[in-house]
Image 1 (cartoon, rainbow, N blue to C red):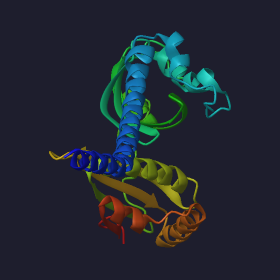
Image 2 (cartoon, helix red, strand yellow):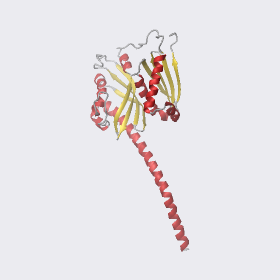
Image 3 (cartoon, rainbow, N blue to C red):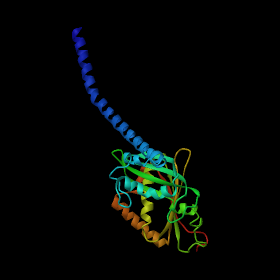
Image 4 (cartoon, rainbow, N blue to C red):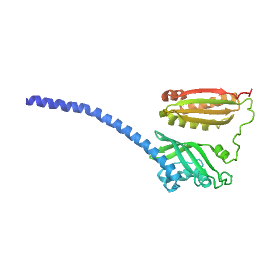
Amino acid sequence: MNTIKTATATISLLLAGAMTPGIANARQVNKHANNKTFTMENNKAIVQELYETSLNKKQLELLPNQISEEFAGAGGAKGVKGFIDPFMPLINAFPDIQYKLITLVSEGDKVVVRWKWTGTQTGTFRNVPATGKTISSDGISIYEFKNGKIVGSDVQLDRLGILQSLDVVPANIAPVKPIKDQVQFIDKFLVPANAIAEFKERTAFNRQFIKTLPGFITDAEYVYTDEQGNLICITVAQWESREALSKAKETVQAKYKEQGFNPAEMFKRLGITADRGIYTAVGSN
């Protein structure tokens, strides 16, 4: 009997030893996943505090908690100064400015936020004297994080729309008659909810890049989210001619190759569908 008990105990120990590595590995995977989720949620919380406290309540002394010293602003300034300098013209012209966060998405080390601000112009803005008008404007910001702080940003905002709201620029600045050779390159994307952050990061880069190419005139982006949380996005880029658009496509493809980026692979991986085409205005030919 004692021999049987001893053998049973030995087998149990051996089985426990054999199972331990698998359990340990599973715990490591779960721990890694939990850490990643915690980090992304923490990054979202930092961006939320940035807008709702630092900017809306003008508690700018909190910015060092959110902005890394490594942050590089568009004008070359670093750290908090590099971040806040672009905001100051708005804050000075619209002292009551308030941001409302519409969408907040975190993926990896990026946080994408779609926002809308409302403010009353009581100060000079872009050489426009105070109008006393209360206006709203929306935009999208993509923030990059490192060690729990923001180290980079890409902000897309409607500067023209602001000036139109202040009656500085006419609401309709399109020519009365379309120019014969101009074409519109129109994309319509259906983006699954879990792919929105990566999609927006890529389209933000693309929109900035094509603006540097010969023959580019203007572009626009229209979005809405369906009941399932999927994003429907339509982009319209206007070009001087089909030839200009063709050359731009070649330049874009060369840039993709340089970056090692494959749009078809990304669309397949993320489940994004696209409908693309070149259009001309009716009556332009």
